[in-house]
Image 1 (cartoon, helix red, strand yellow):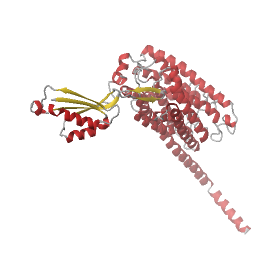
Image 2 (cartoon, chains in turn brown, red):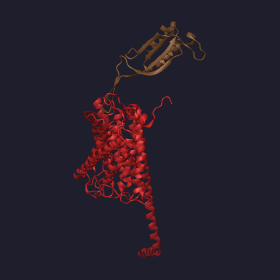
Image 3 (tube, rainbow over the protein chains, first blue to last red):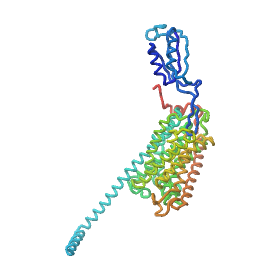
Length: 112
Length: 453
């Protein structure tokens, strides 16, 4: 099992969700986050006081998929989230040791 | 023909002679009815104005200031305005009104109206002859509430609540009440009609804005900068709240300025009109100046400009025609912008929400320009004699500058002394942990935004 963690532009979330749904991925967890990488922030001015704002709003998607499907999911996600500009975000992939469904104690891929 | 008209005339005079006492009674009744009608009109406007001015403090100023601070201090900042609606009201009933408006001496009122003794339905002819004195009293109370609340912009985010309560109580007694008495009280030193040095301050440019704005500067200097000032981001947490607040201030200010006519008359209309146009010009003045300097016209700039214009037109509102009013607003908008964006950062003091830059500077500009643009065409206070510089009375500019200087002096000295006393009694600055946690949590045990709730 692989955990896929993607940090993407907030306005891309609907497209990504739709694309993943089309290949049969329904479960995911989404968090509103702030951060910065190579994308520069912007300047805000309040009554002459300048503030450099470099923590920008992003959306983090977390999902766990069977190991065999990881590449397909990563490609779908990246294609949907891409604008081609700096700030599109990143995807990280982790190995998952175990998955447990709390309701009935299912374990492994069946719990996904 | 002649005979007929003669007959008619004599018949008439006969009738009049017959009912002379009757006619006198009817005349007296008519007079009474006319007076009652005028009282009804004036009193309804003055009660409305009183409510409008209270609305300026809460929610107007509470929202305006509340939005400008960081989210961890939103409640404490709103509390600084709200609690004064209670504190000042009690003080006003017990001693405040008497010290401001009983005759006393030219600098300090007397004790005749202590506990509102004798303040009821009968008008006080010295101030407003057509409304109950209780209406005049409660109207003036609303001014006393907002004035110390304005200062809170300077000490926001770092003052200790107990210190703030003691400070504003003493400040009201030592700075506000004497200043109000000097300018508006019977036989006050700076009174427009009876003063030794007659100054024109229609709705409180000197009494309200210079005193509060200058005291704010002293507070900012005495308390020192907020922790992290200049390094940590201190962006306003919600300009949405601030914009709503500024709009309420604009509306409420009609009660402040047009209400200062103390009657529902043409002078009230004139003050209303002058107020509105000055504010519009000031909002544009600040916005355009900022646009030229930073490249973007911000809504914070537009609303700050509007407030600066409202401040500057306050003393002038009942003395000037609409075009000079617009000019006053425009000047205030541009100068106050330069004050808070250029001058403040040069000196480096932390007037957190620019109470000095907007109220101290805007009030002083207004005081001087009132002396320039006051005209008998609007307010014939001096019975046909010229009013301001444009009428040919250059001395009025000097008088108004003296009035402003007295307000500056009283504010500086009074505030310094009071701060020293408060520092010794309760302390004024919140300790470091309290400031870092935010005053909402450390002083009040609450948070403005409970997302998990």
